[in-house]
Amino acid sequence: MQLNSKQIAHLRGLAHTLNPVVMIGNNGLTEAVLKEIDLNLNAHELIKVQVSGDDRALRKTILDEIATKVNALAVHHIGKQLVFYRASDTVKASAKIVIPKL
Image (tube, rainbow, N blue to C red; front, side, top):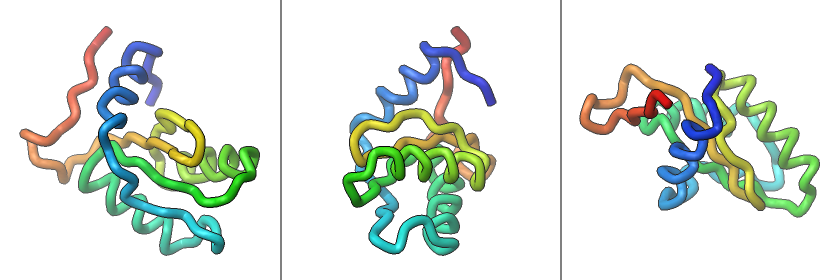
């Protein structure tokens, strides 16, 4: 899925008020963490993930790995917060995120 900069900015704006639903701790990116991220993407479409640790390069690697493994779009990475989007068929129509066609 490719989105233009305006569409990504729209998703970042929606994610601004979200709280992290998954925390990645000292054990790193485990299968259980990936499963939880996948489950939350199915339930919410747009989620925030918090990563502990101060290694920026490691957080960038985790961002790319999550996006690849759960087939999601990496929307934003600022500090220890990662934002992901993936359209879901299991979300109610009233809660579905509508991305503007810009």
